[in-house]
Image (cartoon, rainbow, N blue to C red; front, side, top):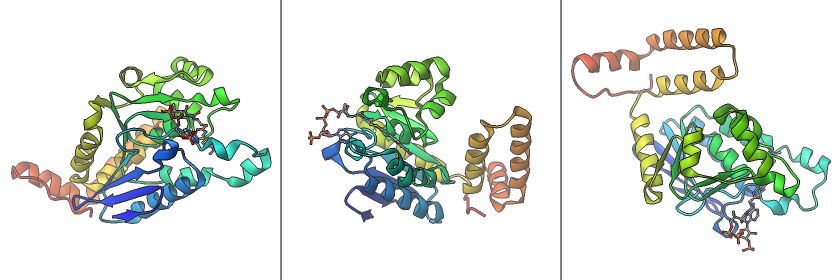
Length: 259
Ligand code: DAK
């Protein structure tokens, strides 16, 4: 377990890592320190062979209330540009391992954008999603307009980003913004269960599936289908693929080594 002031990292024996944001006094607002810590942690976990799936959570009460608004009070355009905060988000985008967001309470602005960097979103029934930047005379800046658009379509996106309206968990599920809604006390446990299931599968297959699914949504269908087929073929050169097929016929659980 690794602790710094704004984030707690736990790596379990089952190859599941848990990242918990820890700025409760500011509703887990993403200040520079927290963004840097997230970035470094995702870089470390990407390389750590003992980690096969990652759960990202803000804990029981709040996921994240967005960027730290204190960082915006006097900032000028050139200061904002020179902060290059996109580099911190990029470490999450580049993480090849599956990320499961466990969202309780508010996921607003950069918090909603952070959740959308995950591959699976488990929401507690108390979760609330929103992009309220417009109410601050701003707009989403870490993918809010574009990731929402791809997840829920133009008209639901426009309603959220133009009004700053908050969406409850059940509605978010209906829209396609979350994968599953569970009782709030169960959010983290359920995300951990899904992560454990994925961590027991072949990490090479899992990572190929993540990569192809994410890349494919911005490609033409024909190119994406070709990418998918090539990745499928590539898996035949892995020991895990042979192990998976043999285990099926031998009626035993597969033991995937990631080779
Ligand atoms: N920043 C800083 N402090 C925050 C905060 C935030 N986003 N959200 C809450 N806090 C602080 C409050 O100021 C308060 O501090 P004290 O007064 O106790 O010192 C404490 O947390 C508790 O907040 P509340 O008293 O307001 O708590 P409630 O439970 O009543 O309400 C709330 C919770 C989350 C509904 C409310 O605090 C709220 O509306 N917060 C602001 C939400 C918001 O507007 N978020 C969007 C921020 S803009 C970019 C990347 C990302 C972004 C931009 C650019 N680049 C890569 C370029 C992202 C932008 C944003 O997210």
